[in-house]
Length: 374
Image (cartoon, rainbow, N blue to C red):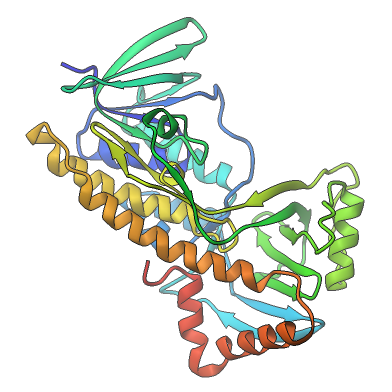
């Protein structure tokens, strides 16, 4: 008999949600997380309707609604002119909550459901499918131990070692760009997001809880990375006329946004989940929510198949690949709107944004942003 029914590799928000869903249904779950402590980074901040539904399924929806900031809407601006304004309705809200707070809620929920389920400081080294079960080699502070499971779920992120171990191809998809990001103080109480689609490149501005605001800058055509606070502020001010309150000692985070899809959802008794299966550009805020949707579908499949002792994840794979394709197409479009542009292409882009924000299309555009149809 295996030690556990399901071993989850990775205690990010997606792996934690899956663990909560399964434990609620009586499945014996253990989560191996290489970090000894929770990740303190802000990282993902947007929670859309599908993600909120998934959090409701583990009874965290009320807590998230209480702690998160709810966006009133968003404006798209270019060269001082508002090209489009959208309002997010109560049935499809956009909530903003830093990922470390979301993770903390999920960790506490899992602790209440199964106090021993989360194994922090447990780095998975190898996973070997032995037919009736999977053998996992885990490195801890006390040495190496082995855990066995009827099923392993790899929720270990974009650079998934488990995906590489299985030899599953990681295929690039359209949509890429280089960005810099910093959070600033903002006591204005403004609850609207602003996208500055400027000739030199995109600047995004999102309110955060507790009087903060996130600024994201797309690198311009020169490719110069604003790696210091002074350089970052200079770019934001030059493009938008706004100078955020970013401390001089704060170094902006610089990252490359890209999109990929795993060729397969997994192999045998090892299945991929979330970013390990598909990378979605953070521009658009869909990735974490899509991972939560995947976790809900995977939990339903595991619970359905557990009594048979054999798992068929082909339907799960088809569904998650289809959803990922839709999300990636949308992210690629959002990123294209933020590229440096001038002349006729810039005028055409401004015209398209005005059209999407026009009264006949405004509701549909808001639905695309809030992940309707994924």
